[in-house]
Length: 554
Ligand code: AMP
Image 1 (cartoon, rainbow, N blue to C red):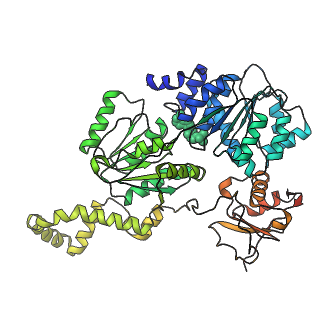
Image 2: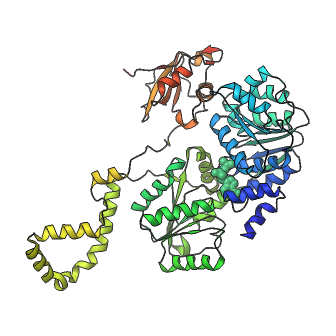
């Protein structure tokens, strides 16, 4: 415990910030945090190359919180994020880390919500403003002094902001802030356009990049599954039904997650325990010994707690939460495939973490194949196989030991041997669903995020755009049409940016966007569509009215 507090305390952050971080359950800083925090604390400009999942939000949020003055009630730090969804996420992260800093307030500024309350929160003295560029420019048009006191600027996911067409807005925002400010830029990629921004607007920036050496992972079969964050536990439970494992280690990010997941597994009858930095050394050894000798089958651990764990029985590693970097992924999955055995590693990927998956594939030089959640039939087959395996060794001598009893019971009860065997099975399986209908009922099938979607920021192929038939429609989505197309200078990213910001949707809510010459098609959630279209009634893209309408497929 002391050692892990040391991890963050060694960074010389304000003790109240460290306390909030430790309370959140983080055990030690991630690589990007280790490297960025001292640089930002020292007041340097910085370029950080990191994607979602590396812990980049805390990498800038913690030192920025340290550097602001809570007694001054005026905007001091501005964080720009490409979408409303990310802005809200970043604002929430700031609030969490500032929990023990009385007087610090955070405001999220994004499109699709009324401007008045946002401006009021800024004027009331929020020190941290987290904003999408489009909406912030709207505020600047009303009050050009709004950013005059900001002396820390963070561009989060800068490459995404440019993809969404925010370049001009960024220039307006830069101009509205004091030149003496500190500027920190985070981006997953550093194309020329980002370097140009850095050259113009950052002063002698330090570079931080998590170095990734190519790593080899042989004898381990790897797969990934796309899930929404709130469906991880049920995904894990489904996977466990069909995976043929001996012992298994699951990795999560926080102490709380080790406890929650271990108790969910325990409730389903698995022999599972949590392993985190709060667990005393002797208890930790007991857990590992139990995993070795089979008293436990599953350990749910944080990276810190699993250090040095070497249990040959482990056949599977589940990365329930994404590791911070490819090295730690390789390290984690190396827990299986020990002593030349084959192992299997599964990685759960939320929609926002797809890019991290690509980085892992690049660094390990291996494709991590996509798997789907088992369907009801697969679960049924696996359950019956388990039952068969557990009963078949018992059959051999059962008739000689219990055959006479069976005869007597069937006579006493007045039933057939089949009826009695069925009753015993029902008792032995303890209410477990063992037919398709019952399994389907117990597992409401939630559609997984789609894995085959191209990056929406990309421009679709030119060429025979008009003739191509619309793609098949995703589940729960409706197709909408606008008369704006490529000939109006529209690209998919413009449509995406407008709909995200004006419609207030999460990025995942928007499906495929197809831009043709004289029109475009956009997949939107069927649920609440009419309201959304009403909201977008006056939206303009490239200076023209979007006029999005439901598209009839016939
Ligand atoms: P980000 O890359 O900023 O989107 O962070 C990804 C996730 O990692 C978030 O859910 C954070 O709460 C979590 N996280 C960030 N830093 C740490 C840390 N040092 N220890 C554990 N979890 C962390």
